[in-house]
Length: 277
Image (tube, rainbow, N blue to C red; front, side, top):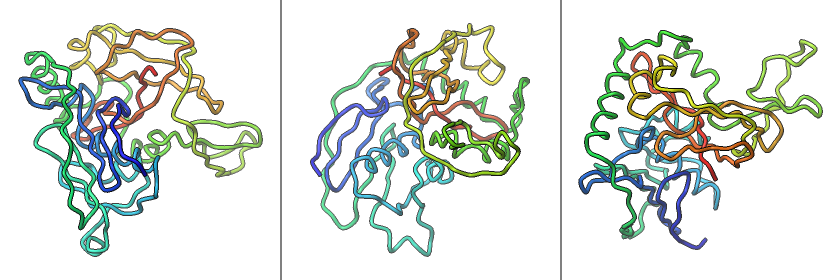
């Protein structure tokens, strides 16, 4: 394995054999800050996904407070160490006081590199966005639109965050279904590539955005949604990420990344969002 530095899933990345460092590209008054739909959990998922993409496989890792263990496991398939398995774990994930995570191999001397690249964000905008998320995450905050319970969300979260599809003969569908077109129960789960091409798109104004996004949409100038022809066949509708320019056109190639979608009843709902390649 060789080390290097890159932009990975919208984040700044540096890695060598014994570590993976992922940082937000954004700074505010000299401090690394999260983008509009990121947090330590999404950075941690990106770090593990990169490590898995270059191999070898990692089966177990310890996570700190501040990273959602359930979402991390759903998105990566990697088990999270508990009290019994902690001593046998070879990798630890650590989070910084800022928008930084580092995966470190145990019992090695590691000096993390300094990543100088950054994009400065307006302090007033950043503060307003943080306040909007804080209000949205209160347990009393419930969508006035299509209500999705935490149980419903959790049931389908793996398929939605990993783009797990289902094979029915020559037909590939996403998300997976309980039954095939003949009413028979089938599994046939397959992993789809996290990429597609824009078939159609729309940008909802702040006033026209669903109530799930009513606190943030005015700050973001609306939200952009795309209908993708996924590389492996099915179609899917996805929000574009909130922290990048979303001047999409039909035919654009889009990568899918795990980000925050919205919060309800004190629970962050994570899922796939699109980034222009």
